[in-house]
Image (cartoon, rainbow, N blue to C red; front, side, top):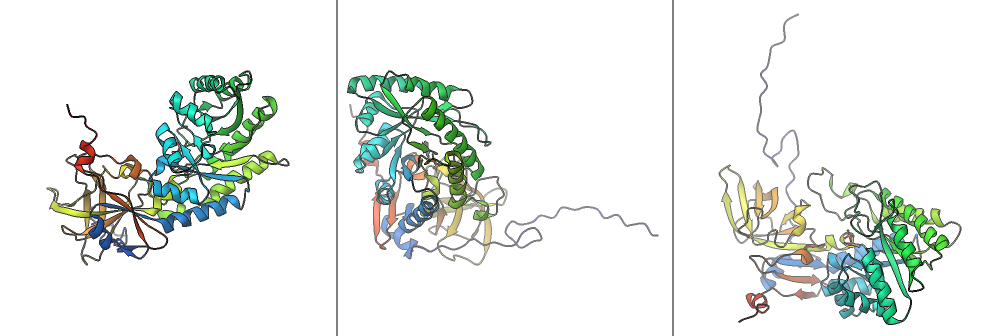
Length: 444
Ligand SMILES: *Cc1c(COP(=O)(O)O)cnc(C)c1O
C-alpha cells in the first residue's frame, strides 16, 4: 500500500457575495416603489433623506393581529403603544381601528388626549408619572398601572383630594423563562412584592380599588411559550387578588413585545420564517387564559403591541453623498442618513434595497451615515450594485422606534410621509430647519 501524499492546507480568500462553495450569490432586491408610488418621485418632492410609511401595510398587520386574538378571545381590547411611533397620523390609524392609547409619560398622555382619545380609553404606564399628571389622568378615568409604592401613596392622596375611590392596576414582573427578567418595572411576583403592593391597595381604607394586573415581559420576544407562562402566572395572581383580597378585578394586560420581521444582529436566522406569527402568540396566551379560568368567564384581555404592528410599514429613503475606498481595499458609501435617524440599527441588520438597477456589478460595501462620528455605521457589510453619488436606496423595516428615538444631532430630522390606502401622499411631518432649533434658545 502506498503512502498517502501530504497536501499542505491552504487558505483561499472567498469574496462575500460572489458565487462560491459556501454561499450562493444573493444580489439585493431592487425596490423602486412602495404601494405603487415611485420612491424617486417622493425624494424629488420631499427631499432626501425621507421616512415613508405605508398605511396599507399597517392596516394589513392590524387585520392579522385582530383576527388572531378576536377569533380566540372575544373580550379583547388592543391598545397602541405610543412610544413605538407617536406621529399623530400613525396613532390615528390605530385609533380608527379601535385601539385605545397606551402611554408611558405625561407627554404621551397629553398627546393621546389631543388626538381625541378620552381618558377612559388611555392606559397610563411607566415608572414616572408626575403628581399633577397622575391626578389629571385619574380624574379623567384613565387606567393607571402603578409601578412602585410611592405611586400608590400618591394615588391614595389623589383619592383624598378628589373625595372618591380610585381604580388602579399594578404592573408585575415575573420569571417567564426568558432572561434577563425585566425586574426593574412594577412589583416582582416571586419575591412577594406584588402581593404586598396589592395588599396595600386592598387595605387602603376604601381609597383604592384594584381592577387589573399588567405585565410587559420584554421586547422582540422570540418564544411564544414565555407568554403562555406569563398568562398562567398572571391568571393565578389575578384570582388571589379577586378571591382572597376581594378586589373588583376586571382585566389582565399582557403588554407588548411581539417580534417584527427584522433581523437581530448576530443571530443566524433565515429571514421571517423562524419568527412567531400573531396566531402563535394568540394561541399561547388565549389557551392559557381559558385553562386558568375554565369554567368561569375569563377576564378582559388587553395588549399593548408596538413594534410588531408598525415596524414593517416604515422605510427610510436615503441617498449616497460620496463613495470611497478604505485603506483595506474595502468600498464605503456615505449616506445622508445615519444612526441619528436609525436608533434600531444598533440591534438589527436592516435590509438595504437600491431603488433602481444601478449596475450589473455588485460589491460588498460598508454603509456610513453623514455624522462626523466614528460610530455612525448603518450596515457593517452588505452587498449592493456599484452605486455612485446621487443614487438612492431604501432602508427597511424602520417603522418602530426610529421616528420617536431619532436625534437632532449634527443634522436636521427629515420629513415623514404616509402613503394612504387611497394612494394619496400625506406629509405627516415636515423637514426641520435651523430656525426650529434656534426658536427654543432664549436670546439674552
Ligand atoms: C414599549 C412598551 C410596549 C410596546 O412594546 P413592543 O415591544 O414595541 O410591542 C408595551 N407596553 C409597555 C409598558 C411598554 O413600555
